[in-house]
Image (cartoon, rainbow, N blue to C red; front, side, top):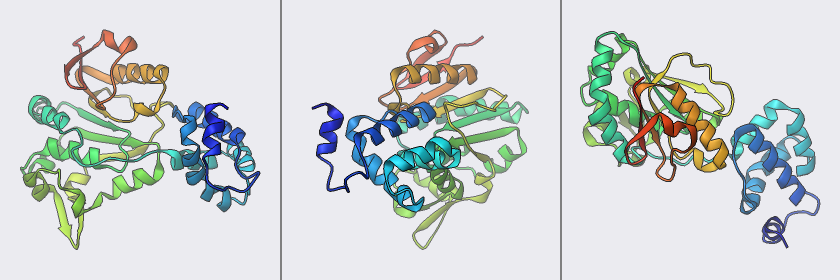
Length: 289
């Protein structure tokens, strides 16, 4: 018995003909081709639990019918892929990245911004926004006037994600107060507005961020190079070849001297190694031109 057949043997009682190994294989192929996500046989139950509501809501009845639906319907295919994405994150995750950003990168970027030069930061795969707001608070520091100064400068933090529901949460910028424990106290007091157990990022900070839907495997419409790119714990869902292509694209999108921050279990390999130098744990700097 192969791994997929074994995985299906362990599934709880599911109506005969509703979900079969061939359905999982079809979904796996579509998701990989569209979003680069690799679904191993052990994810068969995850696929069932996340797509079953869509199968019911579309009136398809079976996964086989739903597969035909997503093969023909771009919007439904997008909904399916969004449902299958994992959006686990938290504020100041992998805090050494923010220490480096604040101490080694921020001073130079603020100096450039005050001189009128453009400064661009990208939170790629921003999920529900905790990374994005951690980046922004690190850049702003504790001075409440910093947001106004950056707003008057040519500064932009771009946050993108494939999952529409995660992006909506990120843009709403509202979180339970009990999720803010990792936010440094001075930054929390400066940029979070707390009431009735909910915390919302201050309006003047939110104005510095643009949220956009983006499939990292698709076209990137951004013309300007970035000074900083965060893409963390996204590539763990990709195969090796896809990771190498993506990191190479990030390297090309970075300005000379720009920094790339990736997840704790991710590494730079392939063509990007020629231009990216590791300067810290999962922190890379693009070589000067």
